Amino acid sequence: MKFQALVLSALAAVAWAVPAPAAPAIKHKRNSPPLPSEDPFYSIPDNIHSYAPGAIIDHRAPPAAIAAFGTDKINIAGSWQIRYRTTDNVGNATQTVLTVLIPNNADFNKVLSYQVAEDAASINCGPSYALQLQAATGGLLGTIVTEAELLLIEAALYQGWVVILPDHEGPSGAYLANRLAGQATLDGIRAALASTSFTGIQGDAKVTMWGYSGGSLASAWAAVLQPRYAPDLSDNIVGAAIGGTVPNINNVINTINDTPFAGIIPAGMMGLASQYPVVAQAIDEHVLPEDKDKFEKVTQQCFVPDILDFLLDSNVKAMVDNQSLWTQPDIQKILQDNSLAYESAPPSSIPLYVYKSVFDEISPIADTDNLVKAYCSAGSRVTYTRDLASEHASLAAIGAPMAIAWLIDRMDGKAAASSCSTTTKLSSLFDIATIEVLPSFLFDALEALLGGNIGPTFFG
Ligand SMILES: *[C@@H]1O[C@H](CO)[C@@H](O)[C@H](O)[C@H]1NC(C)=O
Ligand SMILES: *[C@@H]1O[C@H](CO)[C@@H](O)[C@H](O)[C@H]1NC(C)=O
Image (cartoon, rainbow, N blue to C red; front, side):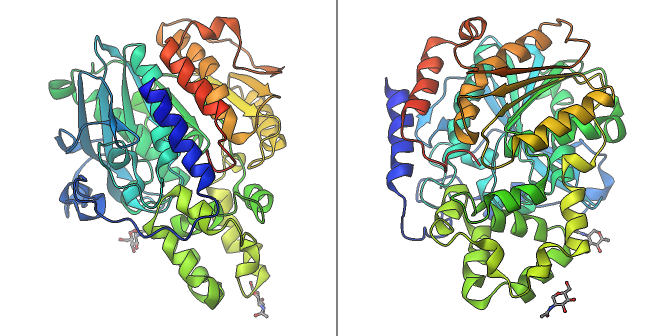
């Protein structure tokens, strides 16, 4: 099958590319749509303060068709880009861009807000750009994760749901600025519900949210912030599926430093630097001169090159001249302010499906066990699946069918469980009830993802 072959060859290429020479910065390709950094649609209007959060500023058809891996056009009825006002991590008005995908035979009363795992510190890696035909990929296969996620998005479109994808890192690629991510997700939902005149989405549509890893951060923060930031959405949002959860940033840094995932650390630091001057100053003053260029380069490329650049030289914590930086109170406070472990629980009106690999090598399972416990004592409703036959990357695919099955029930109006439950499974993939929810071509493609030599760099 063509699509399956593409997935396989793309992922095999990632595996073979290791170790690769440093990838060049994101460059405009001859046939590419304009990069967000060079496209006026992405520049913040001077009067941004005059818009209410979630208000639509403008909309257009995407400059190029939506396509998997930049080449394989997907078969949908329509697509839109909406730019809308949101609020950044420090409370300032800003804007970001929403992609709206309308399936054939759409049910305009059902909307899935899918948050991708962009995990990069550049606006040019955002899904509104990465999902287009001939998009530049921010370095060798830089946005392959976002593009592979299009498989999961296709599974949702196959249900007839309208799928919306916010560029939840905002206009400066603020990776790990998780309040912004949550607010951009909520405002994207507001904008979608207000777009009836051109998208057809009903103003009172039912909305669910879904995301894995970096996408779970945006989705979970949206759930947590909803009662305070978007009380008007209380009747719309009926659930959130979050997988590969990362509740505690400091613990992630300590877990992935000096491992193949270490390149996530500089991307996160540069992402936070765009919102917190104290982080920018710390990088400026304390990153060792010989490592400075590599740090700066993550703002010019996407996830995979970030991982590759720090693959062989992965002790990122040793790349600063004063180790106190990692424990100093002002930096710790910022990491805590963006960690779910230090925030309140989501409301019981947004039931959660949480799935997590017991052997997750990016964020230890204990952090998610503790988060779920805290949520349940606070009155949240959590269905928690712990998966044994997986690790962080593979559970993105292995865990997807059960997540979709759970989302289908919420969209269909079935009541979520009234109390919390935790199950440890050998594998979430071959659960008979969930196989039926996926069209066979997607099931084949998911299996292909898992069968290929994906390597540790697949999902960050
Ligand atoms: C937020 O707004 C304040 C006041 O206008 C400004 O000083 C600050 O630089 C802004 N912060 C960011 C991250 O844009
Ligand atoms: C390292 O930074 C801490 C503050 O975070 C400071 O107290 C200490 O003096 C610094 N050490 C050196 C050798 O500069």
